[in-house]
Length: 197
Length: 197
DNA sequence: ATCTTCGTTAACCAAATGGTTAAACCATAA
DNA sequence: TTATGGTTTAACCATTTGGTTAACGAAGAT
Image 1 (spheres, each protein chain N blue to C red):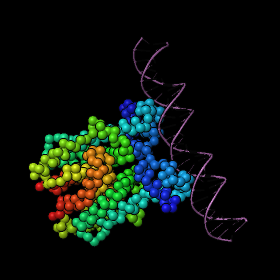
Image 2 (tube, rainbow over the protein chains, first blue to last red):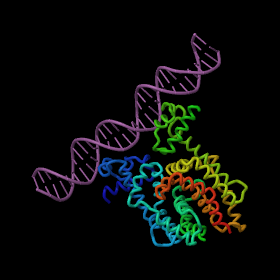
Image 3 (cartoon, rainbow over the protein chains, first blue to last red):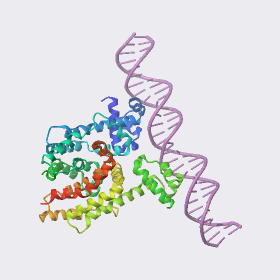
Image 4 (spheres, rainbow over the protein chains, first blue to last red):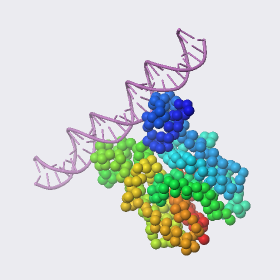
């Protein structure tokens, strides 16, 4: 593993645990097991190091989002595959959703920066497809964007608000993981059931 | 408005915009229009000032959560009232969900602190009620905690991930608000539809 | 062999930041 | 009038923090 990779991994760990403002360059250096000056040698400054980590995190999430948007499946199939694949992925990377959501909320200027990014998810194809299937009588009349919001909400929220849910609903880590396993399939069933004509 | 109130309001504004780590005592003082020393005179230190703000924020959210948990309504009525009341409240306080979720994720030790708090939401009543209505054949067999998660997800997530959704789904503030207005009633209909026998 | 470049470090620096202090201010009661 | 108590401020302080500098060493290049 190159030094740059060591730094990047350490930065990812620290940023995802503490956020941009809470992260300390020294802590990242310690985590990477190198001198603090190396951070600046490799990544110039805190902002650029953070952007590298954030963009990478978002780039990991984006493909799964774009998959649902742009394949040739039916809407029902897309929902089924997306929820399954997304939850599977996020179980292995549970820190990603809170991190991305937090920093996007805290850094509105930052949001703009990657709306032009190549990996930017673009839902227009799926939204049009939903409207078509509504007209075809496959799906009940509804606002396609609301459906999109429902899919994201049911899929991502438990991970985004992990600590809050653990605190309120009082579930252990193992029970949480069991529930997420169940949601891999149950969410799609539930959504499709409620929108099919 | 007393000085303490001025400080508290300013602290709420700054903490909710920047989070604990990103907030600066000087910025809070400026926002309150008073000298920085007053912060420490009134609230001792940053941590205590933050805890005051956080507890207040959570105390505002908790009653609505507890309402659904402990009233005498049927599960369907509870869901209907909760989603409507909660979204209504959060439209007027859209900064609360991201703030609470973010700080609970960042401060796991802090979570413990108010799990003993009097205002702590306790879902045991509702969870038992859901099980009873399942046995009574009113609700399809399901894991009550999953249902709770669905309700929270569909209600809170759009606010928690406001910026992310705005960026991905590409909606304006006014369209977002219109959609939230619609969700006040549509979420309950949808959930009830998918769980009623 | 020596020069150059890249990776790496210890030591250092200026600015920012949370927090303190001592004095001034001001209402009110003796 | 003046003593008294809480309130408020300007100035200050210690530490932390992001960032810089100069030197060092290894590996190729000349």
